[in-house]
Each structure stands twice: as C-alpha cells, then as structure tokens.
Amino acid sequence: MRYFWLSFKAVFIKDIVTELRARQVLPTMIVLGVLIVWILRMASETASAGAVIIGPVSLWIAILFSGLLAQERSFATEQQQDCICGLLLAPVDEGTIYLSKLLVNVVMLCIFEVIIVPIVVVAFHLDITAHRPALIGVLLLGNIGLSSVGTLFSAIVELTRTRGALLSILVLVILMPMMIPVTFALLAIFNGIDDELAGTGALAFVGSFKAAVGYMVAFDAIFVVVCWLLFPFVVKE
Amino acid sequence: MNDIAINIDSVSKAFGTRLVLKNINLAVAARQSVLLCGVNGAGKSTLLNIIAGLLQPDRGSVSLSGCNINKYAQRAKSQLGVILHKPMVYPELTVIENLSFFADLYGVKKSSDRINELLEEAGIWAYRNDRAGILSHGLLQRLAIARALVHSPKILLADEPFTGLDTGACEHLISILTNFADNSGTVFMTSHDTHIGLRCCKRVLVLDKASLIFDADAGDVDAAAFSRDFVAYAGGAE
Figure (cartoon, rainbow over the protein chains, first blue to last red):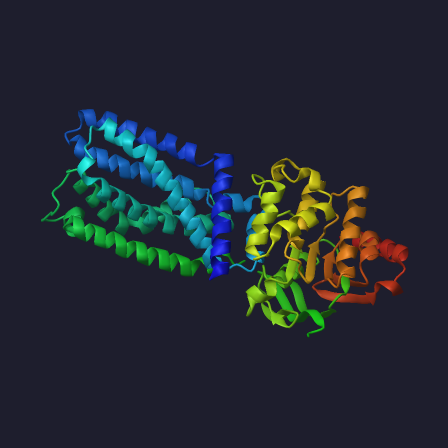
C-alpha cells in the first residue's frame, strides 16, 4: 500500500509540476471557457429563455469542452521522448497510473471552475449564495465523471496514435447518460427548473435533484471502475 | 540463487504477416555482457522490447532471474534498467527532478544519495538543476543512463546506446557499462557499431531473418575482422 501511494504521488506531482511549467492546458481551457460563456451571454440577450436557464447550461458546456481539451493533453506529455515506456518499464501497476492521471484531470477542472464559475455568475447575474455546497458537490461529481472517461480515451487516442476529433466524439457519446443529470442538477441549483419535474423529456426522466445526484454518483462509480479496469489493456503494446 | 539472468524460451513474434522473431532460445548468465548485432529490421529492438515486457511475444516466454516477465511483471521489472532510442525523461522537469521521479516509481530508499552518486558517475552534476528539455543529445543520453540505473538494477538493457554520441561521450558510456558489468550487473545491448560494442561485451550474437545465426565469446572474435565482415554483410543484406 505504501508503494501504491509513493508511485501515485510521484505521477500526480510530476504531472502538476509539468503543467505549471509548460502552461499548455489551463490557459487554453480558460480562453475556450470564457469564449463559450461570452457567446451564450450574447445569445441570451435575444433568447426567450432566461439567464437562469442559459447561465447554468453555458457553465456546463464550458466545463465539458474545456475539460475535453485538457484531457486530450493528458497523455501527450507521456508521448514526448517515449516517457510512457519509462512509466510502463517501472514496477508500477497500470491502474495506479490511471488513478493519478484521473486526479490530475479532476484538479485541473477544479482550478478551471474556480475561474469560470464567478465569470458565469457575473455574466448572467446568477445567485449562488444559498446553494454553494450543492454547486460544489455537483461540479465535483461532473468533474469525476468527465475525467474518468476522458483520461481513458486520452490514453487510447495518444497511445494508439488515433489523433484528431476521435476523443471528443467518443467521450461525448459515452458521457451522454451523465450529461442529463448534471444539466438537471445545475438548472435546479440556479432555479432554472423546479427541484422536482414531472412530464416527458430527458430532464423529466431524471425527476428530481436528489435523483440527479444519485445518477451522477452511480455513473461516476461505474465509469471510474470500468475505465480503471480497462486502462491496463489500453497501455499494453 | 538463479544464475541465469535472462532466459528466452521459444519466443516468436510477428507484426501482421511479417515474422520478426522465430523461435528464439537464449540464456544469458548473470554478470555476462552480451552484444546483439543485426541489420536494420532484423528484430533486435523487438527482442529487447519483449525482454523488457513492453511487447508481448506471440509464443514463448521470457524470465528475468527466474521471474516470468508477464506473470510476475512487477518483480521482474524491478531488477531491470532500460535504455531505449529516446531518453524517456520529461523535458519540463530538471535533471534531479527526473531522477527523483523515477526513483520514487521504483521505491528507492534514500534516493538523494543514490541520485547524487549517479549524477557524478554520469558526468551531469553540473546540469542537475537544468531542465531536461534544454540538454544536448549527449547529455540527454547520460541522463537516460542515470535514469536506467537509479534503482540499482541487476540487468541493463540498452538499445543502440551509442547512436549520436561523439567519441568522448562514447568512451564515457563504455566506462559506465563496463563499470556496471564489473559490479555484478548483466548487460544486454544492441549496437550497429560492433567495434565499440565488442569493447564492452563478453559475448556476441547476430540476429538475422528472425533467427539467431551467430553466438560466440567476444574473446574468440577478432573485433576488426568481425566489424569488417558485419559491415559488408549488412551492406549486402540491406
């Protein structure tokens, strides 16, 4: 167990230090995120839907696309100088590498959200004072779900040299079941919809804020475990 | 105590329809240094990657000191140091940070002492706080050697370690490899430059057309004649 933590910590710190020095991911995420929020803010001025609907949706879109952009870089650093071989030659369990990379991606998204959430709140005049813990919880669950799949597919795309838009397409398709409860929960937090929703449609299928959180916890658990189990097969050969 | 450091048992490997290794059997004794020669595409790097556990053989198995590389990967890998074509170091990290990172991955205790010792031995002490990304090819190769030795492995695999090095750097690398072998280490290396390779190895193998076609003690081989014949053979084969 001591060895697990030692290698887990080593990979995590290495990735954070590398990103802080290279500054390749965070600035790009912030620029893309602000751009998405700005475009949707302009659109909301003429749209019939209120800011309480477009605001939370723009936040999730910004997180989703900026997150995908960041996660595409997860294994790019390992490809330089064949560093992935250095990792695989070490007596480290492949699952440990996956978990470290997952945590790095979650931390990157958290840092991004610390910047983008206030921008969305100001741009759309949203009130979060009453729901701050719920917002933090929902964003954290969203980060874990997004990063779990994104980390695995980043490895597939980088290590199999199947570059291009494949990562975004695959991740978005697989994340579909996750997107609906996150959207519901964010809309509920910002009073865009009622806490309980009846009727037809994807959001009504989720039903309530509690159910949305339940779905997110379940998807996170499933995605993390399945991706962790699949990761060794991806990195071998 | 198992006296066979590397045991390759009936290993075959194909990429698609192209057979790269055909039923390779080889035993390398502990503390032996072996040079593997072959023309481009002979399968040297593939064999080395299979020994390192980076590639899976289609048939057969590889054991390191009696430990199957696929069944007991972690135990086998802990006794292995590997130098490949690329240095496998992170350009954004400093020389010391790179070595500390790999020392942590291998669970090295009191790693700072070991790292300082290696920085001196590899001749990169003066560059210890420089980022790996700004080092020259020769210095990167020295860092790659230090990285491969950071956990004091029993076996060192080196794939074309002399490529791109100037004479001084080659001499330095030969002294490191010789020193490693003299300290009870096993060396298994590939090299195009048979003349340099023979200087630091006690056994020479030639791989051609997916099979081992030559196996001899380096002492029994006339280095100059072997190098001349090999160059002529390689020129003809290519």
